[in-house]
Length: 289
Image (cartoon, rainbow, N blue to C red; front, side, top):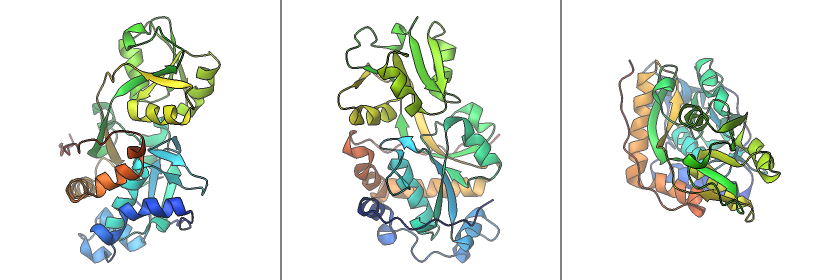
């Protein structure tokens, strides 16, 4: 399950600087070929094709945001580039497809993408539909309000408040399940929540703390993250449920980059410009039921 569509190489200087942390110089796949992988494997097929299609977000600063060049940038994007590099695929041969929370599983299942790297929380319901490598980062659900808001400090303050989130997301489901007195407004993308927050249509936006931090950083003091994270959100790489071989290979790549510094380099070049340095998570090599 792979595509052969290629996109033009990144031309912007900033994108080139970001790409340095995922190049073959630090152990990436400069000279990799299909023969380096088991015959018939997804890795061999992608290496032979010389291209990969990766789903990511286009609206999330620090993790997956569409740059002026027309290509996305951020921590998730850099993780995707590293995986491509380990297959011998240069970043100019990656096709980036925008994925929102509601279409990630369908895009994996129908072959629209080869993998999804898109602030994608690993959970049991999703494991029934697709498979996950990772996690490669641990986030947590949080709340964002206008800076002048003083009556919301935790999810216990959400009763009667209009809460904005995204269809198909784990933060939205958590509000529905555990804070039923909140009034939930759902959109396709988190950026769709920003103007309603500014004009008072909603009182608070909820998603993962690292996503909200990106919006706060770009808001020129309009927004604030309040309280502490109140869930654990391990981010994984989504792929076809039946492809254990590919999943285990990606897990191997993740563990390698945790150890050799490429993971931290990717973080520092993107999300680390705003957020503190994290600890590398432990890969969960769960069995597919």
